[in-house]
Length: 233
Image (cartoon, helix red, strand yellow):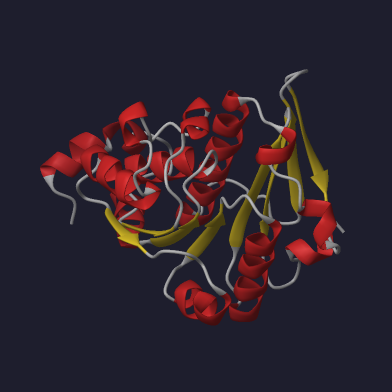
């Protein structure tokens, strides 16, 4: 049962067609695992906590660096050198005290399946190919859906995978997804666009509203402003 404060907090989305109190209560019970709290993870975490997702698991082991501040909006200059998971959890608790943030450290092969099993949905916001394939393999083995996003340079993409179509089907070779913003650079607002799209996809999956990106790849070109959605086979 939602409290009066919660109804006031979520009042704007409770006005949406199909988004009633029962939907909001399902979000409160939902358990979402977010891998990474960098350029993609910060908008994902912010919007999911703001929307009222009750349990957010955060796999993160890095510390805040000065170069992060160009695009990672949960962090500030005085956070440089601090653990990202600690800072992110505190900021999200300030944003929404009804959301519980679980700090889970690094996603490692020997415990990835056990972690994934504890959550309803996984969002891969990592920035390295090994972590992306680990998420894909763990979710496929357990039959979990997961939302994947990537951004580099001026281009970004988002999709949802499951056991029937995985990241390895889209990118069979590790080298195809090895590039990251540390080597090719990235424009900051692009991460906000892609991360927000991932958060929207997660809310579609959790609420059952709208059409998910399963079997489709959403792409965005920041230089032209053009977005496309491609069918995957």
